Image (cartoon, rainbow, N blue to C red; front, side, top):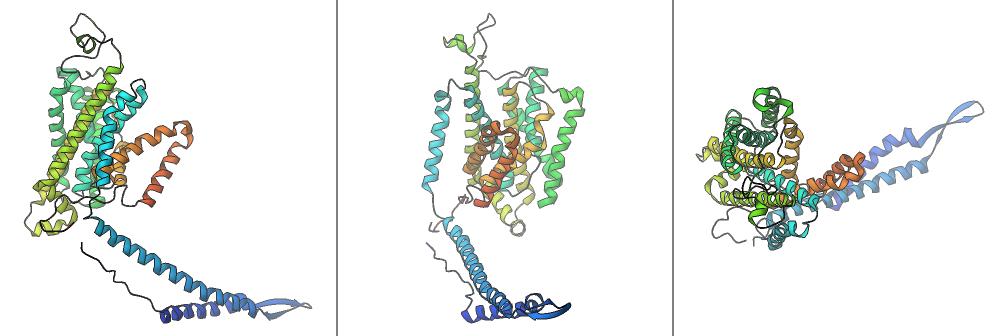
Length: 429
């Protein structure tokens, strides 16, 4: 492994003493009129008296205090430089414990509905976590991999949800028929957003995407004939298990309970929805992991690191950015379809800016570009507010304090180190 040697300017003792002496001289100039001299009442007359011991103590404090402060600052800078270079070394160091932790979480997620079969609240909360995991992974393509700040991601979530709601209620399409169509529509909206914003970066891109998200929401509110306006769309068809609905036994045909000889219970649908979003989330993870090793995924990371260099090398940066917008939007659309199917009712109030902010916070908090970090951050951001329900008045305060503490502790995100998607042959890890 390559060894890095820190090259820092070592401050000599002479330089430290010279710096402290300069500070002491300034302290003398300021201290003589402020501390060394003062007036006293001497029989009705003001006399000037001296306090040279006080001035000497003040100057000595400034001298030795400056030495101590300079030493502390130098140590802090040295530690920070060492930490930065240690992170560079860690980049090539595999972390097997992270992989085993991922397998453990996967196993736990598989048995969770069984372990908490009598607690619908836990399964519902876990389902919500998985929705945000899927949304976080979708936005991670745009923000974490391609480096494009998107504050209007909730718009694609809304496109997917309303696509399923309209196709289901107006044309009778089921969940599985609508899923690819809604994903394609969301991807199309992603391209429509990405095309005019290709020349924008940073804050300007964030403002435009924020406006796009608000435009979609305002259209949904005001175009009543199309979207139902503020009243939303209800009676959305729930997904079925290969054509077997989760309903009580009836003469309309076989149901899930009657087909498998079970007694009907509403928990069957809750558990099915949980496993459905779990499968969708796992497929999303596999899809992104595969893309990261393909040329398009490597191009996303290259554009994120240095767009100018990519142009100089002849890369079509326009297509790279559009592909990131389209794929990220498509994954958001898939999550929107599941959300509409789960809720059975949607309205524009479900797609406000705070949702975009939450999804972006998941990506940033988890560590941009880290798939596993998104899982951890989504779990925290969904479960922490739930735990704070008993302290509803201080809920957001506790939530904000937790966020600040985490960002102070791990400023680069919980999983701040990204595994390289591709390692050149011959490079020693």
